[in-house]
Length: 172
Ligand SMILES: [Zn+2]
Image (cartoon, rainbow, N blue to C red; front, side, top):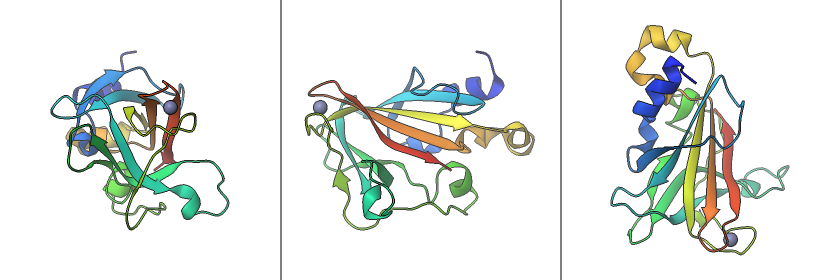
């Protein structure tokens, strides 16, 4: 797949990933956007797994009954004192970049995501960024195209039992 946006994002991951290391990974869900790019996230010091901190969507939307987190989403890598924020819908993604996000966002103390299969809390972390209609972005400011993703999927692979679970899935 050779697409200018795909190649660009691979070489320049979105700015929300600045606090972590991002290495290319297989996409989590096919055909989500015109272009999808996925990364495995690891700690800047090389930590491979960590706890995922965020906010249970069910606490903010009574119509939701699936276990899913909303942002701010952080990863507290093994050995780290604090979580590194990897996504905040207020400032990241298409509408966050334009300062007009209307997304539900967590407040207060974050929760630790727990594996639905074994309740384990340490995960290998993956993120998929989907892009639609980037032609205009290329005209306006080619250096920032990577930041204008229109959907984000974060998934975790449990370090204890290997189960892969969708942690966050949000159109932006
Ligand atoms: Zn598990």
